Length: 488
Image 1 (cartoon, rainbow, N blue to C red):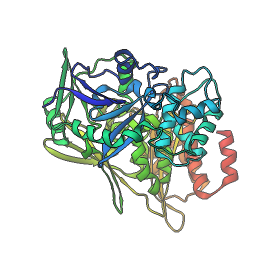
Image 2 (image 1 turned 45 degrees about the vertical axis):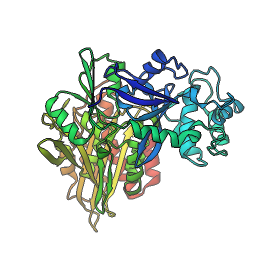
Image 3 (image 1 turned 180 degrees about the vertical axis):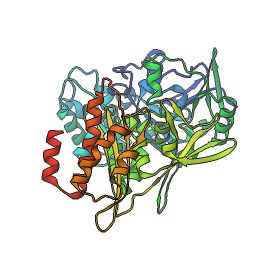
């Protein structure tokens, strides 16, 4: 048993015994360590001003990812290396090449967002060799700037990409082997339990230990990426107790690629899932690219998105359309079910006391089928879904619909299939007339709400239009699709 969270901050070993379950990394950096280069802008993982790098050992290798310090809890940092903008200076105090490129290209004006951009670019620079424009823009999705128009920042990224990391000027390259050795020594041999007054945090040593903890603490809040739970604290000021952190558990980090599908551990981040999914299910890969920014995708997990049960969660609708199967685990063993059966009502899932999401199996769509997922938002990148529709279609040789699965988010209290629409389509020819005849069936399946993201009328019409869009894409009607998109 251990009673401290231990990690490396830049070059310093940190051991915390007086840490609350909802204390954020951003507050620790600014208030306790006086490292004020990391800024607070939005406190909800949107603006990127608080971006830092977090390195963790995986398969014996040290991998760094950009994360939002504003919604990253200290309890999730055990045996990691946290790197802030202050750590980038050279031995003689000279600017890091990433910082110098921003100076050369005039990539900063007011400067408030600049440290976050530096850290996002630094994370990309460490992992991508000669990134193209698209990769640069993807790396910067989670960073907002009100001054520059982004073009100078992109030019800075292109300039620094010509120079590769070297121990001569990069602190992580100089100390990588030393950091690995120190992190190995920090890895816990037992479950960590810390009490701060009446508040408690728990870091289980294994999946078996997690099952034991949840059997004793069935009402505990399980936190993986905290991309949603973090906002419960920073925006809703909720008190969470106890909190169980699981993002370090290697047993939940596995990705098993088989002939028929891929099994994704509950702790696999969106970023890691993208690499496996995009090869076999490109449409799902493109959807993942629009979930938050790079920092959110590095923190958020597929399993957490499912377990949270939000009606506007991005991953459940396409996974339901694909026929995904969920595996739950507890001390009593494993339990499997179709993912669509997991969601019962708003805020309620079919999870017994002591159970947690262990993995999800995602079947690959057949080569002869058609699959698409559409995310509708007010802005294209880094925005919360208003409506998300997913479609899986199977036709026979006569272009008759033998099977179709349709699932939506943002249209009901849970992610939900459209059984009436499906029934109106199956057995019919895949034609525009069939689509038009099926559109009214949406009114039976869904009665959406009006909120600040969209009105009920907009959501209902959009859902119907997405079916029409799916039809036009599958039959290859570019001119009709263009006209449709201009109207929609």
